[in-house]
Image (cartoon, rainbow, N blue to C red):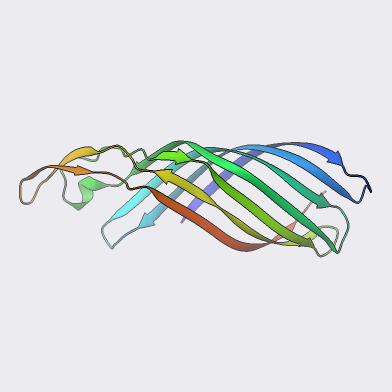
Length: 163
């Protein structure tokens, strides 16, 4: 589970027939989430990113909308809670960011309602290695790291605009 926050700036240009408009979108966001790996092991992620893309939309019902762009996480922190699973410390892990793509396709049902299918996510590179000691058996130092990983969100959302 987690929380996603994003601020966006848009530059809007009407298209030829005035039924559609094109937006150039720039954004900055902060995501936080917790991943439960077992009954005792969890990871908390904090991630700040930038986004840039192009969207085409209309104010009229029974019209299509599209969007495509890139995202880049420029600051990532992972708290693996290693001290709660038997290690002597809990060093911060910092996977690096990689560029990822996002897209959506939607259909405006009415002037203010739309249904939208989307594909979004993050790509992270391997974190640096850190040394920890296992307490129960006195083993260490051991090297731990977060491997490279991709997270993909695929979904459908119902959207309502307020004017």
